[in-house]
Length: 567
Image 1 (cartoon, rainbow, N blue to C red):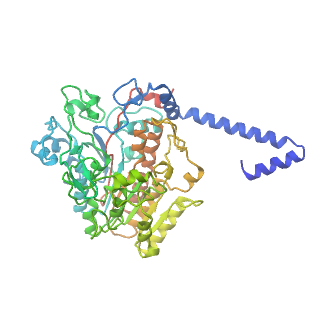
Image 2: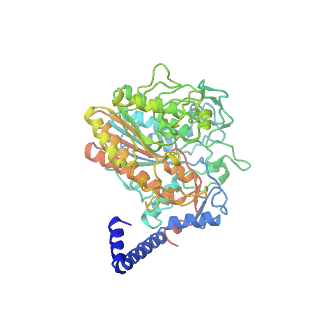
């Protein structure tokens, strides 16, 4: 209730006049009616609420049991779509055809052996048309070698073909495709002056089950316990295929199917930035724990600016894989140090140069200090689990560092804080660091829902997140972050590389939540619009390359997709 309405109501009561009270009641009733109508029209919200209450849903399910809505809450070994812009006709290594169809690495036993270091069972396939996740790094390096000046890698963490389709159906309010690229999001519809292409890739890791020592940064059992691979006869030859053995996709195969691991985000992101297969839980090290150079490292040595942006904490698996080195994805403070050019457990004497831009979440998250000590080693500093106070201070230009810093501040608009810091970084020729998020929810940005109202309903946790007005006001969006990063990186004609992660897709899918899953896809899609608009205004698709993909899938199965838009 506004101060003006409160004042008017009090005055009328004092005068014995009930007219204002009646008007206020009518206004409240109208607002309630609007809210009820909005909820009724918000079909994904209603479907999610009912599915959690009933334990099953007619529109679909997560996992392998159609009678259990929340049957699986982790990743899968599904083939993952790739959308490229600026690649078609780009020549060897840049055109997606260099890695798909008859050029698939999976057609050659020798190439599969070189990729994994072994030949996984039922993985070599003479009819394979799919790429591997390592080809994403190959593509970026080829583009830079061919003279491209601006390279964008957008990773929708956890977004498989089924997740994209759910968002596309909701956006269009109808079902328009059953296979292929589809339409309904900007990245599906955008043509990039006829330079866009579509493919899909294997995301399986080198192995699962590798044990490490975070203090010595060593691997205890190279090779782990479960090997990677991809069996198309069990899983399908395309992302939209119905698998003959759904359990295979989650490493619970039926008799006759091999057991292959499914990747985690750190292993897959490492493959997309280094072109190697490695073990789950590692960041930019090989299967023996040896650090490997990333695309960002290589380009930075050649004079490029480099940056990473994420809607989840700054040193979570995917953004960390843009630049850091560590045998453990959970060693957050050391991962952040690598990203910001500070001494770390992997680089104690000669730190990495650091990213030119890093913006993401993690603000306010002190976490569980006992757990933090266990996962981050003996050098863990109590406080924020992603960034120590001393490290934040040391990087600031106010204390002799090279970054203009912007952090969530009580009572101030997050987008404006970031805008001001961006301007200061550009004007002073500085780097930019942004630190935002919701500490009570592990540091991520607020989750948008399908209707963009930021009011999540429960998933498997049985409790939806609830945001205060300050949570929404004091945090920028992923689009704001992307725009800020591009402004700083692209302030002159110097080439740059940027990773953007829409990390909330993964969190929504882990929660088996169709409402926030759709919302997360669309938030990431908004960030892609920022990129394509910049290319159109400041560059072109002959000197720019945009890759949109995901690091892995989950297990959403749409049985009656029409129910997403009609009851």
